Image (cartoon, rainbow, N blue to C red):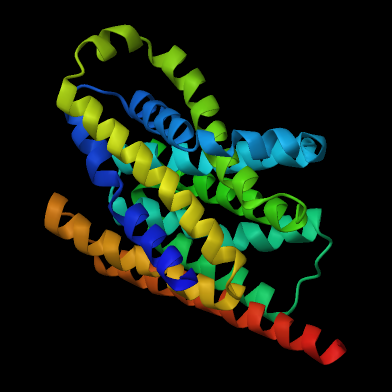
Length: 293
């Protein structure tokens, strides 16, 4: 069951860009589509509200960080996919292990070891190779989609680290934080873009059905992934999450005719290597903890 939960999450997030692009082609902005789908996810998950009420005393400032981190991870990921190349945005998102190590150092007081330094080095080398364009100057993100993918990975890492720290929170609280955070952060974008009422007036019944279906899928996936992460060793979970890259690469090539050049493949190989090394780091931590016991 934990394996199935994580693989289902990787499958959904490797494909989710396509219905969002279809909604954009139908005249629904990325912010509105994201806000509506996560509103429906929150509605589908309303059965957790009694549990949230019982745990209200445990809700604190750390929960706010989870809301902001998970919310931006989801919103930034979708927005980046809408305006950039699928694999490029996803690989920048997959720099998350770097930010996870740094956030763990700052928030959990976890010290860097040889694996941590190697992960940072491999990930940054991969990103520099992918982003290097002599005519544009420094190898930093140069488009909105690049920045969206990069910062969404930061949000994902922050939410994961704070979730690890907040062991008192239940599965229901962690899942609902994703829905509430994403819906909340989409509101400023809706206000900035304007035209929300005009867009909603043009939504057909079939499009409402698609939005509701996506909300149901996102609700179910949130629980599946949280269950998988909770019941599986971190080093195995990291490897299973890489299935998302495979799904995204195949779907981007088949559905959007997108492909990567040699430099981007090289950068991708380094970033994936860093992610796999993260698995080895978690395994070393587990072995060290077992030895101490």
